Amino acid sequence: MMKLTSPSFFLVAAILPATVYAATYNVTVGANGELAYNPEYVTASAGDTINFIFNPKNHTVTQSSFNAPCVHLADGVDSGFTPVNADQVDLPTFQLPVKDTNPVWVYCRQTGHCGKGMVFAVNPGAEGSSNSFSAFKALAISSNGTISSSSTTSTYTSPPAPSWTTVTATVTSETSVWLTTYTSYDGTPSPTIPPQAVDHKIVVGIDGKLEYGPANISASIGDTVTFEFHPKNHTVTQSSFQHPCQPLAETSTSGQTGFSSGFRPVAADATEFPTFQIKINDTAPVWGYCGQTNHCGSGMVFSINAVETGPNNFAAFKELAIQTNSIGTGNSSGNGTSGSGSSSSTGSGSVPSPSGSDSGSGSNNGAFSVSGNVGLGAIFSALVYLTFLI
Image (cartoon, rainbow, N blue to C red; front, side):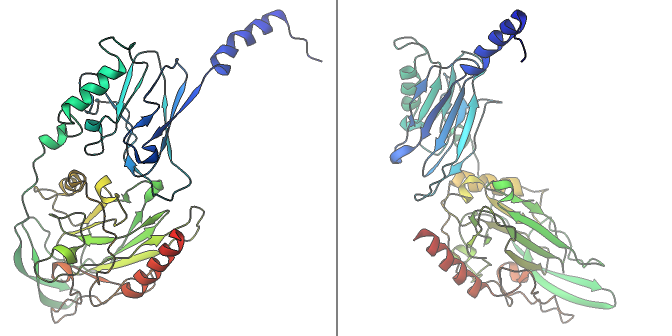
């Protein structure tokens, strides 16, 4: 039997207070549909943890300062937008470690929420003091979010609409030469076909985040782009630069329909992942988003061949999606081009023919063609999604 010596006893006694007495405080975010953290503030010690539990619909835990309750503090913590479905059982969480006993001020940066009093504090001053929680909340409400989540919005300037022109270019592939005509704007690369076509892989919902990975790529004529769906339930839906979170079919003035994968539900323990593939027929920019509720407004967008040297670049597209705070329509009815999409990457669309007639007839005058069958894939996904809801 090991004998506990006196020095050992005092060493254990010295360690215990740092471990045994550390506390975890559970704080619900938006519970029962209310724009509130519950409780609204806690008094905690160094080493404690604040465990935020997200409820429907889409909120954040974002650190601010007392004087600017609704402005993200530089280098402050931020959970990012965390959308939660109304019937979701497994609620996501975010942990905030307490480093000391100084006040920490928090707000929700969803549009309008902070201005309605959705704020939180760790170790605020006593009631009646100048830095009490009541004073902090009153300042957030009195500013109505104007010195607020919207401090970025108030100074935000939308990028100019792309100036589209019709381009006719000569394309050379080995011994074949032909003309191709498509719609694009200044800065778009000249259409060329590489010696070897490349398949670009984009993961949808990479690492459990509301992101495509990578979200911005360049592709050449003849290349393919394969979207691989990861948990939970996302779409690949074509939009336009000016309307990031709406299907192209709803905003096009020239009858373009765009592509849509439909919803692709994927289980958390899945080892095989469905895919959706398009083929690039010219170098005009292609814009897209996830049609799941709130995902686009949280920045879940992508681009192919964005012109990074001009104002209509990918960063501007993503910021426009976030600023509009759009709720994805989930519309997956858009048919792609002469090909169609599927939940596998085995099919392939046709490449441009030497006659100069690109196979694609959808958006951007044939910038892409799609493999498989969009209609059947979308219908199947919708049925699976409805089954999950029931």
